[in-house]
Length: 374
Image (tube, rainbow, N blue to C red; front, side, top):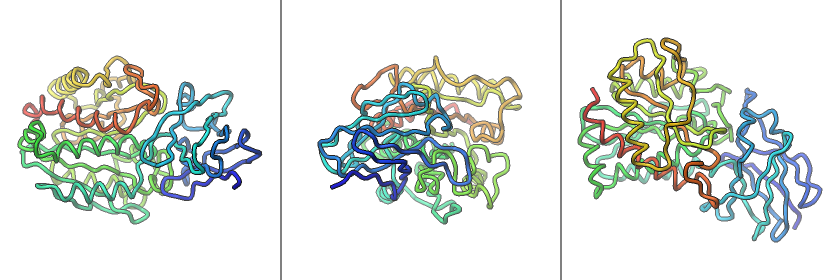
């Protein structure tokens, strides 16, 4: 059996430059459609059982975030269930991944993928839980559903949404953890949260980019997290339908879940620079971050993005736009593609399991402030 590379599957992305033997497999990442963004990769290596392979991704220098490659390690799986980190190095625009597969089929990815099939399984499974309703808020440009899960009976409205940037698959792993906790009938914190608030969760806002193997954009090459000022049916129907649903319910708390390519930390970016920010909003944001850092050793508040000056927030981004429109507490949670350096895991790095655990902890932190929301 000869060595081969393929990526013609859900969320697959790679192109073969040459295969000159197991030690010389050169690849390149395909750009998002109608866009110059690229960084996400996900492909299958076949026919290489027992052979020491070097997979070289040769076009990393022009990728969206070159700072994401130093000290990064790729993930691999032979059963598509368990993903582990492998030896990876970066030099002069080339990412070298070294693997010796045990079998003739190994998957390699930028982060553990969250497929659209797993998404549909999640919506179906959670939709069977008591007190849960599922709905389709709208459809994407490729005609895929924008699914929303609603549960709880409290007066405050909490919106949790992820994967505006489809390559940030850790966001949907986080969503799975949050949904499993919220629907656990034996969890007292979940029961208290459901009594205090009504939850609206959109686990995947960009199904087209997810299925196509994009890093950052939808089918039209649009970055959805720059569309919240004026979304359109032609370019960003995904944002348009979610924002319409928010307008119907109002928003008291919102979290937009993401991943960061470069920073090896979990952190929160807030809305500090919006024109109408209040001491109440800012106080609740600060309290939430402090509580979460106490509850989760994986979360920290020392390192993150620069804070926008007063009145200088980018209102095209969801956290700023939602906080400004609804006068609510809104935030962007960022998780690493690398490991979380505050509590590193040499084998798995930042992983699906840790994403899910952080989702559960984010809900526990919310319980401590939910009674102070409007």
